[in-house]
Length: 57
Image (cartoon, rainbow, N blue to C red; front, side):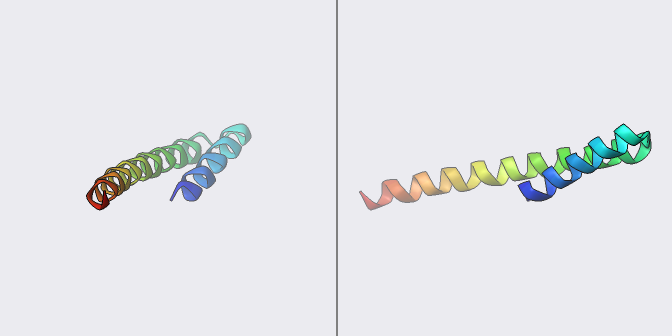
């Protein structure tokens, strides 16, 4: 998921450099959504992993 966020970020940068502002804004928005979705899933799995680690000891 983070890989796709980075891909859309690069697409946004390239489109912005070439003057395609609409495509650039759309790709940036998609990249932002994917990044925050990745961040939320990461935090959830981090908390679950810490809770599972404490149950073993």
